[in-house]
Every structure is written in structure tokens, then in C-alpha cells.
Length: 145
Image (cartoon, rainbow, N blue to C red; front, top):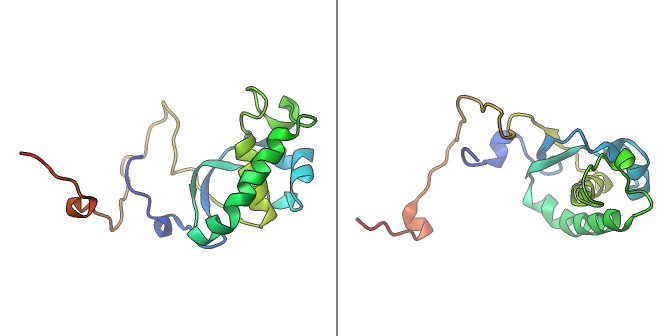
């Protein structure tokens, strides 16, 4: 992380979390989504960074866990050609759990490519930190001189 994450500066709001694209979650576009959510058209291929309103997280967290466990247990449909997962079975089941749970309650993501980079990519030259400051007294940090 190159600076603080201030949710409203990224456009996050209730019902609309901000996240980054994960195009390889092909299960959002095929039978996997139809099996694991009643609202497959709302399945967003996102993960990595998720900036979410606390109210959404409260109503969403247990469903996310449930969907992750459900996908992990679905050995009949967990194959590379359906999931896009090139690792051991259920390596990305938590990611699918997130996307399927979000679809289930119709959380629609604001997808941004500018808030996460991979190793070797060149970061943007300047990151705006917004109205943010660290108050050492508040954090209880003592500096010895």
C-alpha cells in the first residue's frame, strides 16, 4: 500500500463496494455461478482490494463464508475449465465465495484498475492521500530520542 485508503475518495458507498478486476474468475460467466447464486448476472469478477461500507460487510460476512465453504465442497464442478483455477482444488474458492455472496445480495461493485498493481508493474507517479494524517499520540506510540 502506498497510502491510506479513504473509502469515499474511491467512490465506495452502501450497496456499491469498490474492488479490482480479476478477469480469470470465469466461473461468474458459466454454470458455476448458476449453481451457487440465484442472481448469476450480478456476479462481478473482483477481488484483491475490497473497500466496503461496514453495513454491507455486516449483512454479507456470514454469507461470504457460507458460499466459500459451498464452493470448496463442490468437487463435482470444481475443474480448471469451469473455474479458471490452475492450482489445487479450491485455491480460489474464497474468491468465488465472495463474488457469489455479493451477487446473492445484489452488491454491485465499482471496479477500478488504479488501486492495485502487481509486482513488476509501474505505479502511478503520485497517489493522493486526501485529508489524512497520523497522530502518534492517538496511536500510543512513543519515540525515544
